[in-house]
Image (cartoon, rainbow, N blue to C red; front, top):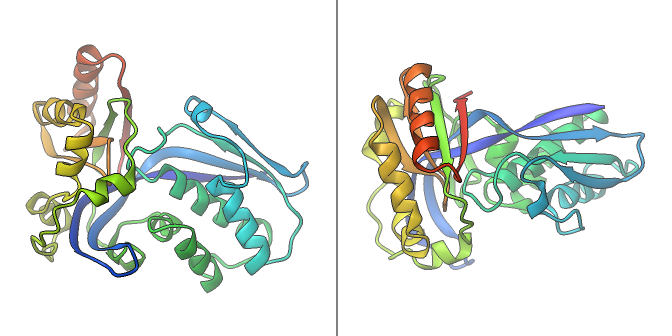
Length: 276
């Protein structure tokens, strides 16, 4: 059995620069990853097929369209003609929530298959599979801090991100990424600053916040609640939403904020974790 983490992705900043002729958008984004997330369990000798478990698993179907199944099929077609495996997805992250759940699951599947069949982690075919699976999958394949450009797939390693405590909050609404991008106002407000990534993130923004908030106004409540907590270094929506996050200097203030959110909004999803 091979167990591969599928860590939650955060966009510390996400600047949309232009609409592209291919239907995508030109982006600049600061990718970071959390210690916790989903999990892929792969048994190369088990009965072939995908099963889904975990507290957030009921929102997904284990069909051929699932990103995990697509990642396995692509690996077998393009990287190594290996037998189909038994794959279990342990789903802990909310679906359609802006923290790369499906993308991280697909990337973890590629990494697990590579480990199982002796394919180097930096094999260019894995990255090409990731690019073709989705815009966030290449960053999730790396699962380390990176500056993303293009549609997010042109990556540069990002140094200097400390392992800060972070609180993730989702108000239990799913937001459609295409709908959020479609509502972007088309204004290029400039790129991400160079230098210290936390300082650059604080000086930056998420250009998808206004359209996401228009679609799901409860995001306003999540952002306001996080911003009001003592000790917050940065609070922002991740990706196209609706998950929001807050960075803290220490675990104590993060844990106190989590308790406050739980008391104010007991039905919301929360994750206490750290940047990895």
